Image 1 (cartoon, rainbow, N blue to C red):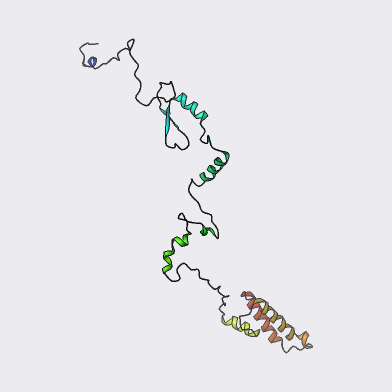
Image 2: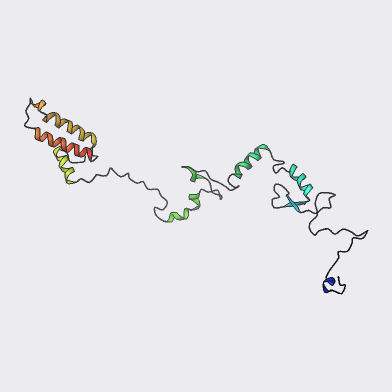
Length: 205
């Protein structure tokens, strides 16, 4: 190897640590455990009501701290239960849902309708109006429907029970057995039966 080589000039040798020299400590916070001089590279929460604040510990001391850490230290069982209930909603205020849920008192001691009483200047604003229940809608009738009802001596607005009763009444009246065997009303009876079958198939009865 040539001692006058340019590559030889670029070689750098780490100096040996002499006796009495203090070891260099990496920059950063020190462990906050009493008597520890190690680096505090691990954070640990300081506890309830000090959220966002942390201790700096070394690895050994942060492990010891975590083993004994209790967020609910100093709280009663009742306070712990209340905290868990509030935690379900993210500790945000909630209101009861239901028919009378709007009757709660506002933050200024007045009910919401009193706070927003300004809207009372408009006549009828905010007042509940009762809506009449619509009556049964009449089904539109076709030509065959109207003819079928007419054969039963009905106008098409009767309910199913009335239609069925009228059909039975006409059958008993026009049937040959009810007329001493007279078959002069058979054509009329046949038309009534056909009319009733149509209304039944159409859903009127």
